[in-house]
Amino acid sequence: MRLWFSPASEVPIYRQLVTQVQLAILSGDLKPGERLPSTRELARRFNIHPNTVSAGYRQLSRDGWVEYRHGSGVYIQPEAAPAQTPEQILDQHIVAFFKAVRDLRLPAVTIRQRVAEWIASPPPDHFVLIDPDTDAREILLTEIRKLTTWPAIGITLEESARPEAMMSAIPLCRPSKAKMARAVLPAGLELIPLQIRSANKWLDPELPSLQRKLIGVVSNWIDFREIARTMLAAAGVDPDLLVVRNPRQPRWQRGLDQTGAIICDAYTAATRELPRGPRLFVFSLLADAFQMELSKFSDNSQFL
View 1 (cartoon, rainbow, N blue to C red):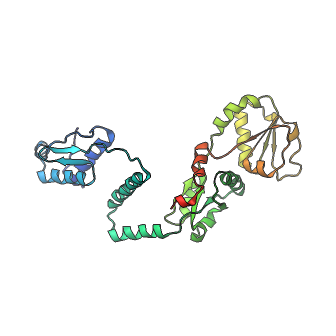
View 2: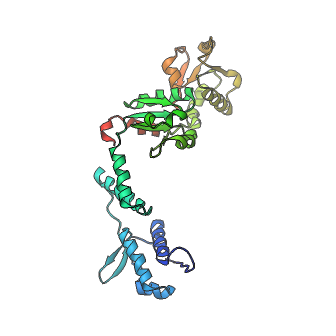
């Protein structure tokens, strides 16, 4: 392992040692059980005070990176057995939390007070979807409500700024709206961006069955209609074969019964009467991985 020390740096020498050893462990340059140079050897090699090296080693030991072996020296901490039970995993997260807050240099009283406030707050019992677009909210809420027994409501960005609107809520949003949502949410709330399905990957296996057919695209949401039109055109579907309809418009069903397939969103499929002849493709906006994540919220007794 190579080390560098800069006496002129604002960072203390012992901290330079600690950081370099930590990075070497994380990168694999130092292996579990490997012996570090002795305090005297390191001090002589780099012309630094032995007490400085000792201070660095003590810090590494306190933080769990190394261990002292009596009469033998300082060794990289052996790999601990991976946590097996939920309780052990929870303990690991708690330890990591306190290691992280220690670097903040906050008084212990302040940390305990903030933790107590979090624990005392009402446990979450519903989802709040934050989105400025009413049509997008309708579609996403339709999908979310099918995946969990928890209630789910939709609100605007402006409404999400009110603390009472977010009480006992887990806030969700589209990835493209995450920055705006975080800017207005009350402090201390964890925002969960939705994982959106890849239209490309969804369309690829379905494309052979759609070629050379009239295809209906039906949705209240203009973005859904435009994205579908663009993706199908990019995939080689003749734009003249597309029958694009907004269900809010009069006579929106006109011509759809002549199509071979209809692509629509979950809200449209749930609320509109579509022709039965064409094959129906309901494109879910939520990615499969996120659908599985949401489905876990079926028993609020297991969550804080």
